[in-house]
Length: 390
Image (cartoon, rainbow, N blue to C red):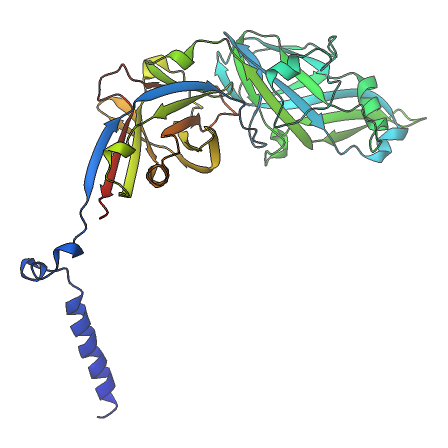
């Protein structure tokens, strides 16, 4: 009987503590000091400024290789293959080509597609290459190695681009040398009605990766051997005419691929009590579908980036949007609680958020968000819940 007492005692203690954990009822609530209650207020405010900013797109190795032209948008790509086996040096090269697997399009998917392949003549960097540096004199050999016309290219087709065997042989012979001739291949669009995206080196399926195929024969033999190389790096760059979006108060423009980034500014700190505790801050942007351009590949998502004291967007603090359809409009909701907390903590931070397309480096979607001239219900707004701090 004595062994059962601890169990009984534990059960009674559990029942006692369980009763103490209930929320206070009206009688118990009246016994709590007023200071024990958390006062939560809310605030909703409209943006005081918007903008659109030209930027160098972030390079993602997992992105698409983009080549093509549509209206005033033009995309070029540079590919650099590596990992040539030493055995190729003693063989005669009889043919070389690049195969690319189509994975994306923007524009008329059935439009004729064509490009030109040029030898690149100078070194380049993935993070710094722009359309201006690619077009600069001396970057590539003006006379193309090939100018294939493919007709219509559907979204799972593989295209083949022939290369000059002498150029590729010079790459092979300078592998490991202090001076190399292998700076890659520039693929320049010569079509006019579609932008194409091809699988990158990061594709998991080998069939989707860009492949350099080298066909060789040994001395005294007629047998053709093929070496496939699918390792390397690439960079896609694009351009479009200036549409004056930076001065447009009607819309915030986010253009993937080129790229334009949107910005939205608030003057919210002065509306909050000093040292307010920010519980939640939600930025809402409303899409103007008629002014936007999207297709079946579009990801309806944008990033919000924090802007530091120097006025630059920082990759150390950002958030991805969620989408909600409300009253016939698509709303992009961005939880920027940390942003507002930083604004309250340090007044030197600009109260500006930079908006970036989720597929900035791998697509060509154009998101036009309603701006300062729209009705208040459609304008960019910031909703905050907070508590005053005594």
